[in-house]
Image (cartoon, rainbow, N blue to C red):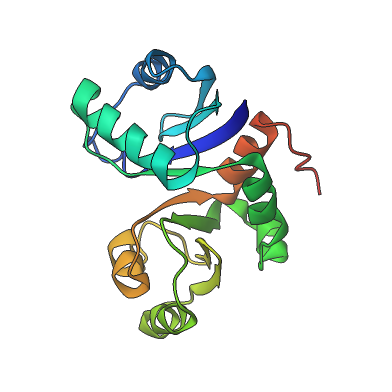
Length: 184
């Protein structure tokens, strides 16, 4: 069985699109996935499966979550090997050490073109910095995330891809949950 990390887009934020993590774990169990675990309340799950992978797994989770829980949301699924690469490829190691809550990885459903990443960087009004790496965009928010004009809506529009963000602390916690060495 393969371990998977699943991220749900936009759940339990601002009182909208609510899902209890116990309900998410139960759904994963009902779908036949092994050892479902969740982290925090923001839609992070880890489970084992010998069935589907990649985009097929994402579509199944989206369809079944809507059908069984009445929740329409996007899923972004990565394997531990892919997660290890997310951590290893971080272009902002200094920020990861000094200000991990303001370093965000946006997980995308497809890799953006270099020109799209450049267009996003050009659209930034503040001191944020963006780097694209495969199906992820790494973003620093040195002045904080809450007041930034670089929202998920702007990011998705410029990159031409749906996404969901997790701060570096959460990225490392999920890595640890699947047994990765995240100490460096």
